[in-house]
Amino acid sequence: MAGEVARWRADGWEAKVGIGVLTPHTDVGPESELRAMAPPTVGIVASRVDFGAMAAGGVMDPTIPLGPVRAFAEPPYVDEAAELLADAPIDVIAFAFTSSAYVIGADGETSMLERLRVRAGGIPVVATCAATVKALRLLRVDRVALFDPPWFDAELNSMGSDYYRAAGFDVVYSSPSELPSSQQQITPAALHGYGRLFSALGEVPGSRGSSGHSGSDSVQPFPGGSGASRTRTGDLLGAIQRRGL
Image (cartoon, rainbow, N blue to C red):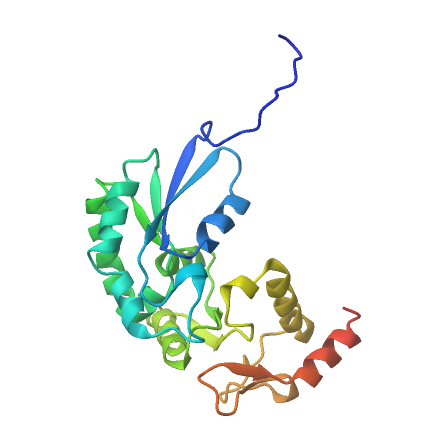
């Protein structure tokens, strides 16, 4: 009847575009974030891939080892997941795992994406780092700051810097984020608060000079840590207070 109010909510079947997501088996972050960003006309379908560094509930060690990171991008599990995912009504597949590109490099990432595209019957497959490089070049960005998850150790973070430097970018800052090394605790509020600390400084710490530090507002290495960093809390809080945040 004309003017009748619908008594149901959209359930995704009306989506005009489908995005398939390849994600670690206990990680709900990628599909949740994509659903939060996507309009109702875009549907999100996820396929889970075994990741040896994660246990039930998304539990991980404080830092993840490189072996499982590399293995995630190799056959057979991710290839089998891509093949199954391709049978769903999707138009593109997102490989939602950043760190593997750090380990295998841009050439290895390109080869992996082509391998998965073939396994998925020709459906395009995109990945975080390769897509980021394309976007930065489109925006004519030259200098980047790299904030990795807190479960990335110094070696993995360094590989990330190497990835973007090899792509031609000036990496002015690179460090694991100073947040709890637990996915359950990385909430939107926590990320927003962390970002405000750096915004309060007016620049990315360590972006000036050859030493990677910028005076009293620099990010200093965490003594005895495994590549994480510790901000000078007093300086950060002072900057926030001065700006009335």
